[in-house]
Length: 287
Image 1 (cartoon, rainbow, N blue to C red):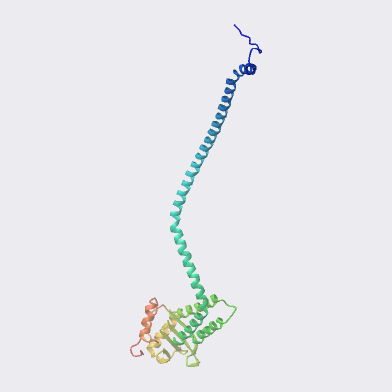
Image 2: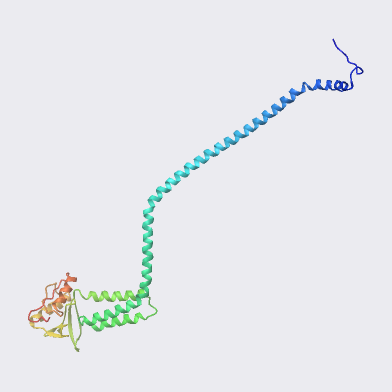
């Protein structure tokens, strides 16, 4: 049964409500549909957010794994570096010590180079004094060598190294006179016009034999003069000269010494390989 209401029978507010009823009736079915759309939109947005979050998590996870790989590689590299450092540490310490020694040597070298000219002059003076006190064999030649060294000290065209080499060579030559035999002709010391045959036995004996072979002498450092040799010593002197000329096999030669016995003992202590020995004669030895 339906009731139709007449507008004339309804009060005025009721008239307005009557007009709204059809609209309300139409809107009732629309409310659930709009709410469903909102839910679907919210769900889709939530899913998108979840997807983005998962993507970020996945990306962060990949980055974390990459960082872990890099961390392990860095740890391995650090371990290798530690092992290498342990191996090279002694080498580095040795290298540092060597560098320090070289630095010290260079410092000392600079100081030595500054002092070298004075040292060279001192050594030349000592060489001259050594020759003056030595047996007077080849004295003019040896002193002339010293003078050349002295002149070279002021020669600007020569370096200190060259001057030092020349000085060392001169000393080596002087030291070589202390070994073996040597014979030569020259003017007699003290009588230069008289030519004689000399024999030098190391640095312990200096002798001369007249050209006719009839007389000779032994130099004595104690007196600074010649001691006449008897016939027996002259025979020994001739033998020594023959050996110095390689005309005779090495043998023992008995001759008076030119230097005191104490000096001979020091000489023999420094050189025991001489093939020829000069021995003092009891009746002619001078201390």
